[in-house]
Image (cartoon, rainbow, N blue to C red):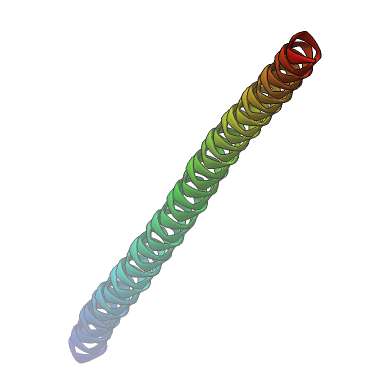
Length: 127
C-alpha cells in the first residue's frame, strides 16, 4: 500500500515535471513566433519606407524636369522676341535708307533739271 502511494506520488511528480517542460517549450515556440512576426513587420516597414523614398525621388526628378523644360521654353521665347525685335529694327533701317536715297535722287534730278533750265535760258539770252 505504501509502495503504491509512493509510486503514485512519483508518477504525479513526473507528470508535473512533464507538464512544466511542455509549457516551457510552448512558451519558447510562442516567443520565436512573436520574434519572427516582429522581424517580418520590421522588414515590411523597411520596404515601404524604401518604396516611399523611391517615389519621392521620382517625383523630385519629375519636378526638376518640368522646371527645366519651363525654363528652356521661356528662354526660347525670349530669344524669339529678341530676334523679331532685331529684324524689325533692321527693316525699319532699310526702309529709312531707301527713303533717304530716293529723296536724294529726286533732289539730284531736280537740281539737274534746274541746271538745264538755266542753261536753256542762258542760250536763249545769247541768241
